[in-house]
Length: 189
Image 1 (spheres, helix red, strand yellow):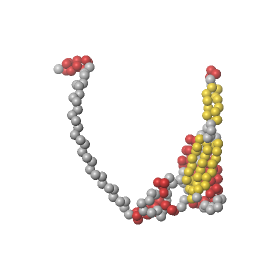
Image 2 (cartoon, helix red, strand yellow):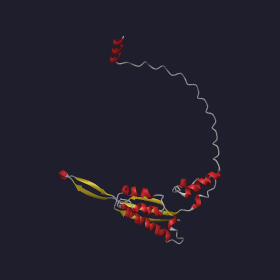
Image 3 (tube, one colour):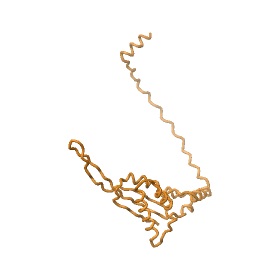
Image 4 (spheres, helix red, strand yellow):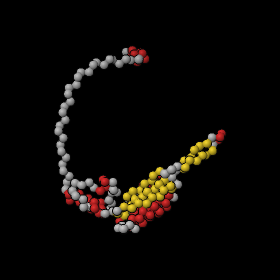
């Protein structure tokens, strides 16, 4: 189950927002809130509000997810419209200023242990675009893979055919020497 929250037209550039979002992607919600609480960047307060809203959306649904089972699945900062302003400069010139806006999207999902009971030969959950499991979940996943046995041996490739005999190349013309080089050789003799 997933839930999302979006803050539109936030007056900060997307690159500044993405620096903070990179730190919380894939984390448990509780851990992400701790990271945001101690982040020195001012945008962290706005991101905290969006994250709290996404968690509230997830818990208030019909099947209400447990907040301790939620993790940040998607955290993105998309560029919004730009306000175009003018900065006066010397000699009657004017420089343009772009005041950027951002749309912050956070999607939280319930982390279930479904990837532990994966059938042998199936792709692991993290390969499908989900966050990598950590802690106990990673150990359990490793144990399941060990129990599945070793990977099948790779098929041997047929030996490569020998390349056909090369045709004799035309004789290359001798390199020309500059006049200065000829003079040096003659002096050495």
